[in-house]
Image 1 (tube, rainbow, N blue to C red):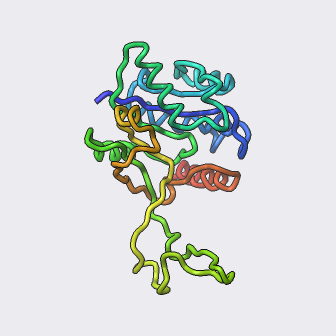
Image 2: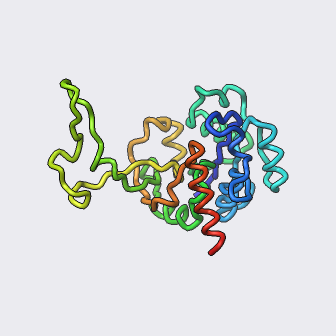
Length: 227
C-alpha cells in the first residue's frame, strides 16, 4: 500500500493570524504534524500543501522540501479540502508516482500521536472509503431546539436520562483521515460513504480553531513536556 501523507496549510488563517507558523509550546504549529508524518514515513511521501511563502520557508528550514506552491484557485476561502487532495494526487501522478491511500493530517490537531495514526491505519482496507477519527460526543444529553411555541425541547434525551443511558454518538475531531484514493477520485470526499471510525480521547482530539483552543492545547503540551 503506497501512502501519501498530506498536510494542508493555507496561509490565510483568519481566526488566529499566521496560525500555522505561530509557536505553540515553543514549536511552530505546522511542525507537530510534520513530526507525526516523519514518524510514519520518509520525507518523499510527505506533501505539505501551501500557498504561503512564509510557511514554505519555515518548513524547508525545518528540513522538509515543499513539493509545490499550491495554485491560487485552491487557496481561496471557497476552495475545499477535496480540491487540495485531488491537486496533490494529480501532481504526483504527473511525476509517475501512484498512491493508493492518503493520510490527511490537519495542522490544527497538535496533540494527535503517532500510535493513534498507526492504530487507525490498521482499520483501513481497500473495501472501504475512509477511516476517520472521532471523539465520543456528550452533546446528545443536552442538545436542544426551540419549538414553535418558543420553548426548548431536547432533541435526543427526551426522557431526561443520565448520560450513561443515552446511546453513544460521535463527532469528527479533524485529527486523522485515511482515504481511499480511487474512491476519492471517483466520488470526492462528500461522496464517500463506507467509513470506519477511530475513536480518540478528549485531549488528543483538540482541534485549534480559536484562541481558547490554542491556550488549551498549549497548556496540555506544556504539561506533557513536564512529564
